Image (tube, rainbow, N blue to C red; front, side):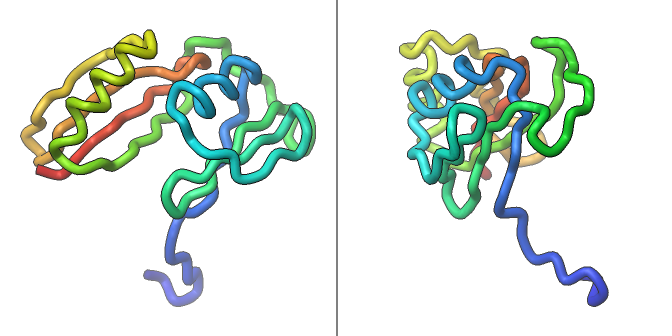
Length: 129
């Protein structure tokens, strides 16, 4: 750690949603993340472990041009226990989520499962094996 930048953790993540209603449905209902705080229709926060995952729309503070829907903007990785990756895959399939890849045991020591949210961002569920 750089003593002049004493950053110890990443505990707040903001996604600038391109399809806010679909993204709220996906993260809140499909993935089942509990709502932490809602500040109107354009800002919602979910608790994911010790992290807060917020969804917002462009324009409140930042108004950069939005990449087209379906174009990869970010990847999020959610860690589970090794035996839970397959369960997650089955549950996501039951909830009509298209699995891109996995579950797969990777040479770097992770069991991975990849899928996308409604905006096209890549999501990963992984376990250290």
